[in-house]
Length: 301
Image (cartoon, rainbow, N blue to C red):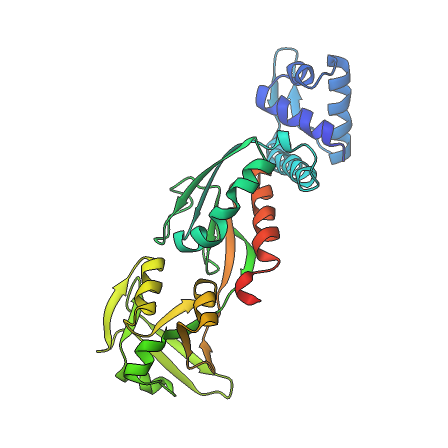
């Protein structure tokens, strides 16, 4: 399919003027008319209604328009991914992500991204409180679970894992639990809210991490503070592996009940509204994050 003809159609649909759309693309009026007619023949439908006085979108044209815009966005993103036409990828991109993850893995990469795409400006809203994509008019968000909303698309950034852990000092003072029931005698730290998480062992045994019990004395809604509290010996907590992999490596945090896993293992997802055409600016940012983070996650090495 001729993308130049598609570009002409999108411009003509926006301007409701075929000649003006052609002029913007450097085409004489006759060439623009012929190219549009060729596109209509290809798709088998009249996309624009023409009279001597005006141009209007047909029903078929209105249906085809969002797909036409997506085709152009895909073309721009493909060229940008190969290093061509970076100057054409432009606009302000609003992105929200958990602040703890962003500070550790995304923000250090931002200078490289801005150098690659000088036409893009980033508006980063980083918070461990989940911000609404639609109400916040965000182009893209990072989530640590697949969301049930039917109005969102998702693309996996990377695998993750959640583990129980505590500081070595805490375990020296309070002992090491050997089965889930032992957690009843320990101090447990909750993230955001008290909850019960099911634990499953490979042989079929199960248990719970229950922060609703008497051992729960601390709830924290900030990821970095949550890790600091665990590191300082406030109790046993559940952390994403990406957050604590360095502390596990140096021994300052110790995995607890390593033979048990969470009932539902998470992953990191990049999500965006279905109602939005996936523009070049969003696609190149997604591809950039997957290339720089997702292809070789440091916490899984």
